[in-house]
Image (cartoon, rainbow, N blue to C red):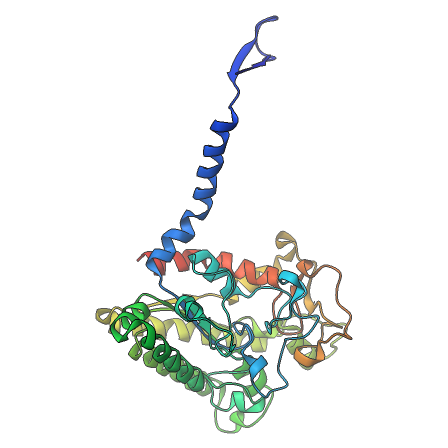
Length: 377
């Protein structure tokens, strides 16, 4: 079949004839387009066997639902923009960054919490999160809220391995872990909840010494995961902590009228991140013969850009959260009685601490080159 189109630039009366594709021709083209859109995830999934996540609320999909702690997010309005508006325990209105990472790699759309009793062996194989909101690398940090310490998350991972070994055998599980990605995101609570808020650690450590103390725990944790078969690591840095709405509220001279970022706290994050990158490079250099690959995931830079160039990202509010007043509400203070903004996608923060789903997606997009480099290297 031919489609007749008159070209304005052609001479009067001259028609050009273009072939009109039939349905039998269009369908294969659509199929090729669909294949093209998913080929990246499929290619990456062939190189990555699973994803195992450790840390705090930035990567906790609901483990705290099964822990005796008030720090939960398994009630409305959390999950407002999640499929079927289910409050899963994620401390945001929708998905976490690790959900986007797992989907991009081609493993699964959502990373489930390890403590969910409904997990299948397929869930364990493709990946789970051991993270717990409120946790940190400092052993003191999780004691304030009764959540899962980082060392306990490691114990749960060892338990997970044993469960898999019963099905797959020890040798196959070892190979599986060698090809998996280990994602670590924690540290903010060590400073925001612990060091800068409660004076216990400040009596024993000046800031630099405390940063070094936290970093030592980070290195030991990575080494422990390496001993369990981990070879590919993504380690997230700290955000601009002085820009978190709760930090502005608690530390500003006028929390209502002066809601700019507090550089005292953000500078501590910048310094820590530089030290973290140095330590990760040093570990990579010293352990490269063992197959260790470590990538630093920059959280600070992308969030800082979203804050100071918010218009270009489509954000209208970056100094308060969507839930309640946005100044102090998080966890149980952000509940079904809280007022909620009409459009969370215009808010950088969902509550006074945690990013919105849109912000998490932007963080994922910013990290994609790093993810690609780690997996394809």
